[in-house]
Image 1 (cartoon, rainbow over the protein chains, first blue to last red):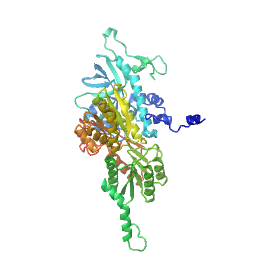
Image 2: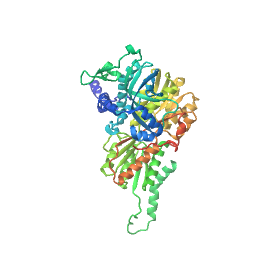
Image 3: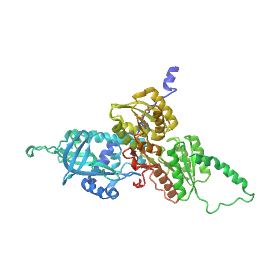
Image 4: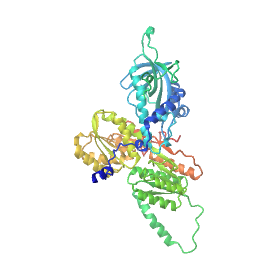
Length: 232
Length: 329
C-alpha cells in the first residue's frame, strides 16, 4: 500500500536539466519549423536581393545596405541578408564550397556546408516575433529545428551534388557585423541550391527538376532536397 | 558598490534625521520642482556586472530628469516583492527591473501593472508577455551558440570539459547551456565530465571548481561557465592549482574578464552590452511616462564573442567608442 502511494506520489521527483520549456509548454518546435519553412521562408526567396549588388552596397555603406536590403533584429551590430546568386563552384571543402559569381569571376562567396547553428534563418524573414512565445527557450528550440531542416533539405543534397566546375544557383542567408571581413569571401548559409554538374556539353547533366507542389507537369527548379522528397 | 550599498542602508536614517530637524507646523507642500521617481530593482549587487546594469539605468534615468533609486533584491524573491510594495507605495512612475526568477517574479510585475506602473525588464526574462511594458533581453542562446563554436575552434574536437551553470530558476541559465550544447554535443570526442550549478556566484564557483579539480584532476581540458562571475571564481581555483593549461570560457563581458581575455588567461566571453540594455530601458520608461504605449514586448540584444583576436573592440562593458554601438530597430 505504502509502496503504491510512494510510486504515485514520490517524495522526490527527478527532472533532467535539459528538459525543455517547449516540452513543458506543449509547444511543438518541429511542427512550427516545418510551417515556417513552407509558409514563411520559401515565399521569401522571391524577394532575395542579388548577391553582387548586396556585396557592393555593403562595401559602400554597411548601414545603408542594412536599411535597404537587410534586417537587424532588436539591438544589434549585425545585419542579416537574404541573397540570391549564380556562379561556378571552384573549390569543394569538407564544410564549405567556394563559388565565383557570374559576371565577375573575381568576386567569390563561400557556401557553408557543415553543421548549421544559430538563429539567422529563424530571424531572416522577420515573421517570428520574439514575443510570440512567453519563454524564449521555445524560440531557441525553434532555431534548432529550423537548422536541422536546413541541413537535411539543403546541406546534405548540396554536399552530394557539389563538384568543382559545376554551376550553382542559390538563395542564401548571410550575416555581417559592421563591415565585410577583409581578405576573405563572404560566408553564406545556403537555403536553396540548384547544382548542374560540370560535364561535356553533349551529355551535360540537366538541372535537378521536379514537378511543382500543385502536381502539374510543369517542371520547376527546386532545391536539391526535392530529389529526396519533402525531407520532413 | 560598497558606497552604493552604504547609501541605501543609510537613506532611511537620513530621512529620519531630516524629519527630526523639521520644525513642527503644517505639512509642507511638495515644491513644484520635485522630480518624478523611477525605481531600479536589481536581482543582486553581489556581481559587478549587475552593479553596472543598475547604475547605468539609474544614471540614464537621472539624465532624463528623474529621481532614480536602486534596490537590491539579493537574489531573493521575497525581498524583491518587498521592494515592489515599497516602490509602488512611494509613488514611482516606472520600474526598471532585473528579475530574480523568470516565473517567481511575474507576480510582482503584475502587481505593478495593476497599479498602473509600467515595468521594463532588463537582461532577465519573465515568463509572461502580458505583464511587463517591454523586456530588453540578451540573446543568451545565440551568444552561447557562437561561444560554443569558438570553444570547438579553440579546444578542438577531442577533449574533456566541465560546465558550471548559473541559477537554475533563471531562463538565462538554460538558454546559455542549451546554446553551448547545441554546438559542442555534435562532437563525440568532446566529453563533459561534470555539470554543476553555482548560482552565478563567484565564491560558489570557486568552491565548485576546487571540488571538480579534486575529482577530475588533469583530465579537465576546458571549463564553460554560465557567467563571468563564475568564470572568475573558476579562474581563481585554476590559478591556485597551477592549471594555466585549462581553457576557460565565461559569459557576460565583465570588465575584469575582458582584461583576462586580452592577457590570454581566459579563452573567451560573450559581451552582453549591459549599458546598452539599461539605457534603453530608462529611455523606454521616459517615453512611457510621456505617453507612448506601443513598445515591442521583447527586444533581443545581440551577444558578441570576445576573443583574444577581437578583444581590442571591447572594454568597459561594451564596444569601444570608435565602434558603432548597437542600435534600436
